Image (cartoon, rainbow, N blue to C red; front, side):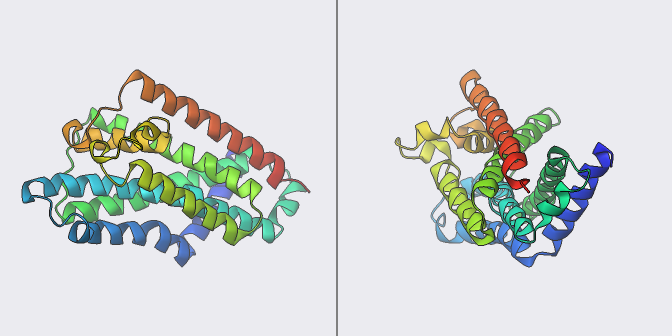
Length: 258
């Protein structure tokens, strides 16, 4: 099989599983949509009316980040663990399939599925009154930041899948990590975070990427700081590349043992 064929075969198979599995669709798309609708009515009900469009816009971005993390950190390792339980890797090891290209097919699935879910969340957010202002110059920055979140989260998901053997355990550990990341620096604008949590934001590529998107679509004044600085960009790039590379290596080494 050619390299492209291996990536394509892995992508088609993984995408079919993601779209057919109600648990994956529910946890990754329906839950963020539910929070997008409910949170302004419960937690942010006392926010002045003039700030509500920007708040809804920020929540829409936060829910997109939550979706990406759920897909990459929970659903991806869960599906890998399920395939290992079904002895898929023993079969693939006897075939002319390269672990790297099979894994890239799974990563493409995460990108495509996250893009579909993100568009749905953004459309629902706009319908609910979210204000998102983006120009053609901002779009590459937004896509780049979102891609960084996907790669970092996928790298962590691959590590979880390689270390944790059980499908249920892999998915639940991923959910726990998602929630920790969400409440550290995504649930609220940077300016409203406790001082104890602010330093953690600057060493977490997911939080940095989320703030990058929010700054370009909602505004720096609302977020509370501008993450487009040398230190945050460097930390995001270095940690994302490092963790994704480690994830690929561990996945190909430990998941593909006979």
